[in-house]
Figure 1: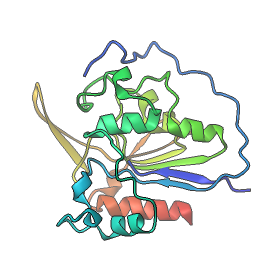
Figure 2 (figure 1 turned 60 degrees about the vertical axis):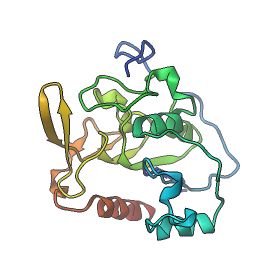
Figure 3 (figure 1 turned 60 degrees about the horizontal axis):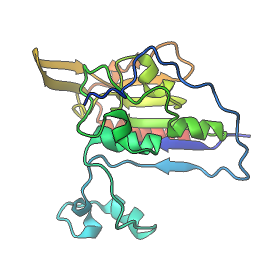
Figure 4 (figure 1 turned 120 degrees about the vertical axis):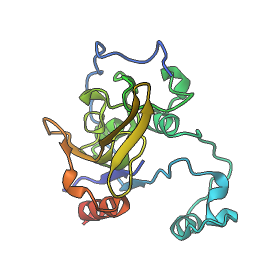
Length: 219
């Protein structure tokens, strides 16, 4: 039978891990009585008043529809930035444990969520799920072991840094050595030896790539 699918769309500290640390051994499988499909959409840096159903001038009809037909958590608090939000979502722990509470991970920083931590997709794999991720990673990329296809996702399509142009998929940032730019749109499978830089997607709108990829997987 086909496995259910789960999809996730998206400060230095002494606690930050080095490459000398080894990930923990794979835990035993957990048998669940039912395995419903799980689709989690992370709207990055979305403020409480940035949605239409909260009276914003910003039109968010699809988010409004999901909210009006589901459960609204009106007093649910999250972090205000990309890396902190993702760290807490993926680990289920407060991010001060990892020194990631103050800001984001810059493209050249050798940091990430420690490999000793079990992430949400790894826990889902333990329960028999297939796991997919589309979109932004932004919790460590300086070594392949820190990238999504090595942290529990069977397949990843998106970008590893904090953001990129929707059409060119180029990321630019002002470093200590001046402005640096590069192409950041990648695809990788857990069984792949290396990731693939998808330069063939240049000129295609990012959201369309994500939607088409998700539809193909669900079909």
